[in-house]
Every structure is written in structure tokens, then in C-alpha cells.
Image (cartoon, rainbow, N blue to C red; front, side, top):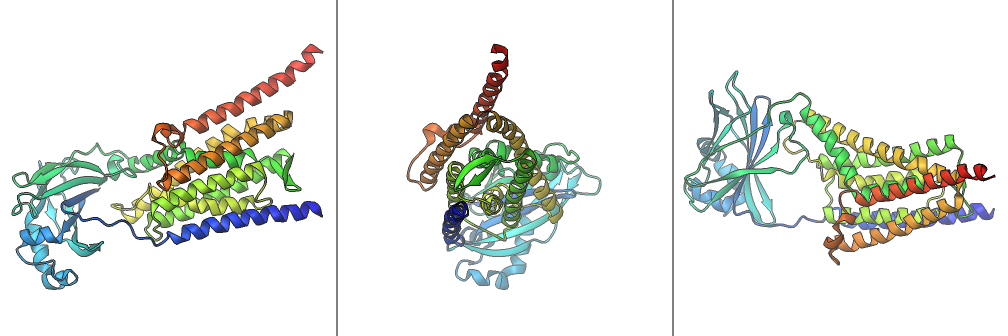
Length: 433
């Protein structure tokens, strides 16, 4: 009876921490992004099998000088007043060509956006290469605004190149167009079958392998996976089939959670500012550290992994935007990125679980000391990350603690050394007898 009461109390504390974290995160759910003026134009390039898509972001207070009519007095009515004229103007000043000749530029889709009080026109073009022409060496022709405003600049970025494998990465600046310079060659890698899928799979693996915070959270889950809670303490080792089954359930729940928010976030259906998400990730590590010391979620580890997976998925989604991708490409991107994440989780499980099982079976005291050490380390690091991500401190001098996965690698190496030492000690005993 005492054991059941203590387990309920432990689960209650876990529910309290979880509820507090989710409530705090919800406060930042609809927080507006920081607004800033955009004095220059931006051109985003997304390649397609038949050519490329161009997305132009044009500040109205500059566009009106090139267009020749006032646009900033009533931004909401710009398209109603000048939609056709703006489309015709843009078609005159946007083009593309290659060695085979000029490319066809279709009528743009126009939208007026208001970002923090700074209105801009977004124009989306489909640009098609001539039949039989290569799409890998285009030249952009562009002098929107710059033909009239000599001080204006248009920055050109490659956002996605699915055929060349450039996807899931930060847009790369290709160059700048200005008065007197109205053309820019677009260097693209050669087309490779499956390049986009392979790139996103690798990106998912790297995201976990180099993410110290995510690896540390997984480590906390795996270190206590072989243990069963009793009377509010980690007491006995589970039988091996139960360990494997329990670990599979916990990791599956974590996967389900982060997959859900990864999909929603990358589709733009859920938009949470990155700062509260990164702070929340650090808090999950702190709670997981406390749980590693003493069971907060006795009997509810799967639910904990699911809920915390939702939070980690929001962090993953920041690395995978669907911008510039077709629906089919986006579906492949989600699958590939998630498969990369799951592959690294399985690698982590294969690296951590065997030595932990050896320690638990052969030397329970060493195992307990290791568990307490990791719990303290994870909680302290998580507290430091919360302070850093809140802007209270700067950890630049010890940046290796947060990037590159160096610390988790060293911790796993320590676990293996202890396990090998424990096994060697056990094997040496009969020889001395």
C-alpha cells in the first residue's frame, strides 16, 4: 500500500512539472515575431523539373518609385487598384535565359503582406525553360525597382534545389542585383536521382547527432529504461524482454510526439517562436534528469515521452520548412527527415542500452552512481541552457556543451568504460580463486 501511494505521489509530481511546462509554452504560442523593415528586395529561387519558381519580396515604399504610382497610402487596396498593371510591370522586368534561349515567365501571383507595419508586395512566378533545354545553368534577368532607384538592391537566394540535393538547409546568397547589374548566373549542382530525399535523410541524422540537448534527453530516457520503480525509487532491473518492450514503447511515443509537431510545424499549421521552444526543450531535459534520479513518472514514462516529443518536434520543425517545395516533395522531405531522426535514435539506443544492461546486471552500485551523476549533469546543463536561451547568460566560451554532440559522446564512452571494467572485474575473480 505504501508503494502504491508513493508511486502516485511521484506521478503527481511528474504531472505537475509537465502541466507547468506545457502551460508556459502555450503562453508563447501566439507571440508575434519581431518585426523589422525590409528596405531591400529579396528574390527566392526554387528549382523545378521544368525551370524554377521565383518569389519576390518588394517593399512598397521602394516599389512605388519603380512602378511610378503611389502604393503606400492604402496598401490594402493596392491589388484592387493596380493588380493587372503591377503584373504587367513585373513581367517587363523579370526574366531568365540559358544557352538554348529565353525562358517563359508566367503571370505572377500577387499578395500584399504587412509585416509589423511595413507593407510589401510578394510576387510568385513560374519560369519555364524551352523544350529540351537544360535547366541547370539559368541566368536570372532582373531590374525591378533598380532600373529607377540607383541605390536599391535585390538580394538573390537559392532556397531549394530538390534535383541537386539542396533542401532542408539555410537559403544561400547567390548574389546581389542593382542599377547597372541586372543579370545573375545561377550555379546549380548536377541533377541526381533521389538527391533531395538523401539530403533530408542525412539532415535528420545530423540534426540529432549534433544536437547535444536532444541526445542528452535520449540518454536520460535510456539510462533508466532497464529499471522498474518501487516505493518512489528506482529499485529492480526488469527482465530483458520487458526492458526491450518498455524501451520500444518509450521511443515510439517520443517518435509519435515529435513527428506530429514536426509535420504541423513544417506545414505552418503550428507556429511557436523559437525562443520559448528552445527553452522548453531545455526544461524537458531538466525534468528528465530529475526523473533519472528519482522516478517522477512511475508507470507513465510513455506518456512523458509522448508529451516531451511534442516539444522536441517543434524544435525539429524549425529545421524543415516546406517553403519552395511541392506537396509531393514536402511529403518526401518529412519522411526522409524523420527517418534520419529515427535512425540516429536507434544508433543511440544501440550505443547506450548494452553497457547500461551490463552495469545493471553485474554491478548495481556502479550503475546507481552513474545514474546519479548523469542526472545531476543533465539538470545542471539544462538549467544553464534555460538561462542562456532566456538571454540571462552567455555560454559562448563553452559552446561545445551545446553543439556538436561532443558531450553525449564522452558520456557514452564513460558508460562503456565502466561496463567493460565491470565485466573484466567479474571475469577476473574466478581466475584468482
